[in-house]
Structure formats: structure tokens, C-alpha cells
Image 1 (cartoon, one colour):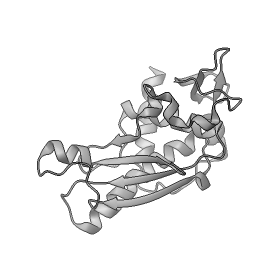
Image 2: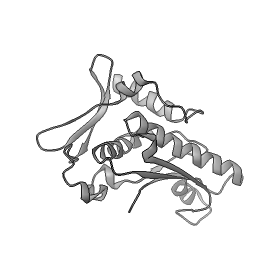
Image 3: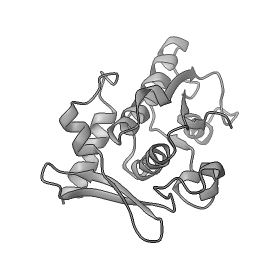
Image 4: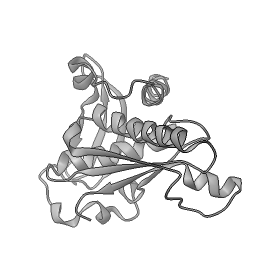
Length: 191
């Protein structure tokens, strides 16, 4: 039960209007958690004030010692790091619950590789005015940035770019094309 409450809280936080605020230091401490098992798999999640695990997800073979640092996040070809696009509902900047483990996996990778950084590219579908779409795309990118920050990724390693409707992933004027265009793309710097 606690897991779903926490997921709901994270999703709600991601959709907050004032996404540029930094969480309190206590919140940052509660948001940081990560351990590596003997096989190199990393568990990333949230811990409460007394250290109890509130939410946890295994992010796959990201070794804490930086082994394979040159391999980049593409080394996780079939796993969570292979997903670099976060999709959004119509007229929403709220991260969906199923995408939280993906964002946590990218946060774990960034924490394990201090030289890495990402550009979060926000996009919308063609509906809405240009100004509205630029603002919505920025809010979507900030929602992903906020969740990465809650996992301990420093702001200076995250850059936000808002494209609005200018760079569609799918050309079309139907629900399927619009669904593919409502997104944030996670682009690693230097790739």
C-alpha cells in the first residue's frame, strides 16, 4: 500500500505547477537510496526517515564502482535504460506511474557516472497555440527533471530544452501520431 501511495505522491509532485523549486534537504535525504548487490545490480528507491524502504526498483547491472563507465547507458539494451522517451497524456505534464522506474534507472546511471549529463527535450502534439505548446513541453521536461533531482541528480547535470510541436516524432493528424509526439526525450550529452 505504501508503495502505491508513494508512487502517487511522486506523480503528483512531477505535475506540480512550480517545478523549478528544489526539494528540501530532508526530502533529498529521503529520496536518496541505492545499494549494489554482489552481482553488480543496483537497487534504486526511496527510504523513509527511519531508513525503511518505501519504494524500490532494480535498475540492472549498473555497478557502483563505475565498471563499464565507457559503455554508456546503451549497454542496458533490453532494460530500463534503453527507454529514452517518456510519454504524456493529452494536455498534461504529469509523469505516468509506469515511467517512474525508467526515470529512476536513468538517475541511477547518472549517479554512478558523474561525468554524464542529459538534455531533457520536451515535445507536444500539434494541437494548441505555439506559446502554449512551448510552455507545456517545458513543464513536461521539468517534471522529468524534478524526478531525477529527487533521486539525487544535481541540477547542473540536467538541461531542459522545449521544442513544443516543432519536432514531431510522427507525422500525422490523428490520435496515434499525437500520442507519439507528447513526450520528453532523454538525450545523453556527448552521444
